[in-house]
Image (cartoon, rainbow, N blue to C red; front, side, top):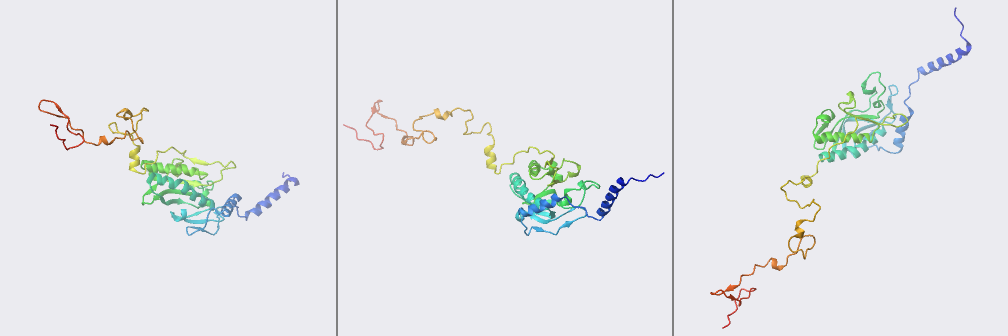
Length: 314
């Protein structure tokens, strides 16, 4: 027996079905905060279009992927730091990457290598895909131009630094440089995933400005580590800081006592911390010994300050 449905239950069901049918043809919308962030960044003029940073048409889809006001970026820092390939990024990412270069990357490169970074080797900017390129995964921030994958850097002398090789196997200063970059990235971006964070990021640093809940928490993996100090910029400075060898002379008295030289010789007349000031007698030839006659008596008729003998008295 088929029971008749109660009218009070049919009405809500019909309304829901009608709304569902209406929404079938509607395009899904990106979260409002993303467009708001783009517009706010532009209104604040955090990014100025140039020959290296150009506004591009809206990227609309597929689905909710895309950007309202994307930028095509070929270089940052006024053209001083290029990309190996044109990056499609939103306004906030462009502004933050520029600040990150100035605050973290370039100071670390200058300290470690004595030169600047001139190129970022990117492994991806905008791409409508799931996290870690996994099918069925939550959309990545790359889907909104709100992320960049960094595979390495090129220095001014042409030296190339790569994450896949140098993070774990580079020389001490190169590894320290990448650790410095990682730590500096965590101060600028809400998500930083470097080698060691998971298996998917073994060869690059992922940075993005994702909104992690209402708390605004950040993700920084792996945890930043302390690094060795940068090398001295000059061999002379390095030599000056090196402790003296046991047999080396040094003018630094580390005993906390006055130097022995303070108690040697005539202390009167010391001036300007350079020790006693010598009088003219210190530079005069030593006096000649007194003359004696044939029987050993002193002859006192010689002026010791003159080379001219006086006449003997008769």
